[in-house]
Image (cartoon, rainbow, N blue to C red):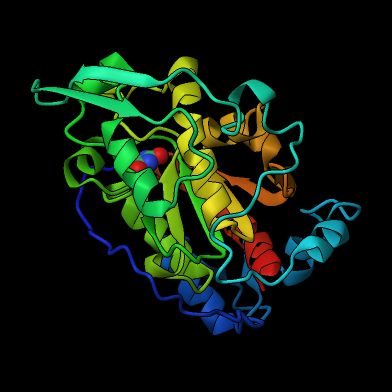
Length: 311
Ligand code: URA
């Protein structure tokens, strides 16, 4: 996580609908170029691009065939007004001890970030909170003393609250901690280009992180911190009810799927998240792509799956 440059985006409320259609070669090259992927054309063989996954390859080999039709058929049009889904079912993806419907200990603190003596009681049950209540309560969370002491502010999440696509990252970095928005640094700019490659803008989607606070020196979130923060994200997912979750990097993928499997092995599959079995796809973190640009082509392949699911 090392994305510290600024590129602000608004908390847009109005969705732009997308109907990604089959892409022309020119569009494909333009998207790949924007991602920083060089396309070599074989002069002798005409326009056949080298190093680009063909349409057949990306759509048929990456998603296990027994998974794809099932998941596709489960995607229903999203009711715009359905902001308060009831929680009647649980699945193995959300362990009972972290289910937000089960009251946890009330989080009461006597100091805030600035050291003022204010008593804040954070509600123990988050499953009834609406977006605004949730956002306020996140600002008051004091569950992780080290993070609370170090943070400038909490980073709730941003984007379209009716989005079909939810991107989940790891935790705020320095720029995000300063600006109060996720993915505003260098990795955020690359994320914007990744979104562009599937025809989305920031204001079309919602972005959140596993942690709402910046871990000091951008260290990885501890298991305890991730557990403390989970009910906030769980409620965000319930409220958003996205058509697809994209977990970028190991921390979100492993925390959401409750596994320790490396990202490379979690890719190429449509996982299911939570009681509703929301399709979840895993790809590399943009900050990793900044360090390992050779993997961008792999992300391009993941994007094709995403586009297919969303269209
Ligand atoms: N990396 C993340 O995972 N999330 C952010 O918000 C910024 C960088």
